[in-house]
Image 1 (cartoon, helix red, strand yellow):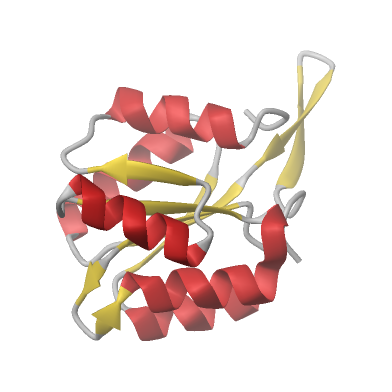
Image 2 (image 1 turned 30 degrees about the vertical axis):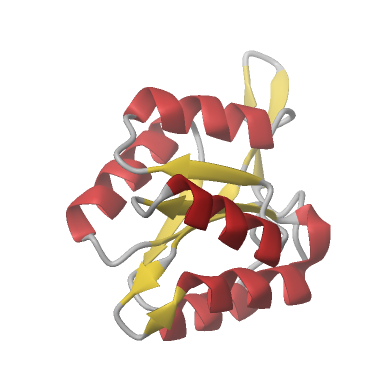
Length: 139
């Protein structure tokens, strides 16, 4: 249910796939900046602010990319990442997003099988590069 889940769009005679991205972060301002940047890059984005909402969202749609903060109000983002990896397999690219110590973030990424790390604070340029790297046939 993972990769290739996005919708096809045709522009200039070329078919492009809009990646579906689930953003999991309880910082509303940051999540909206991230979602806005991803949408500008052509992604379809859903934002969840809790572990419970994210796990429910994982079951509803196929996701191409999941970007998840480690510190959430109702638990750890590692639970979300593990659930996504278990249910969606390797087709869904997992990204650990956190402002914690880089060694802690790297450990969480390794423990959950994440594909990338997005250290806070980050800017829109970082997000654009990450999306392009994770979805080479996408936008």
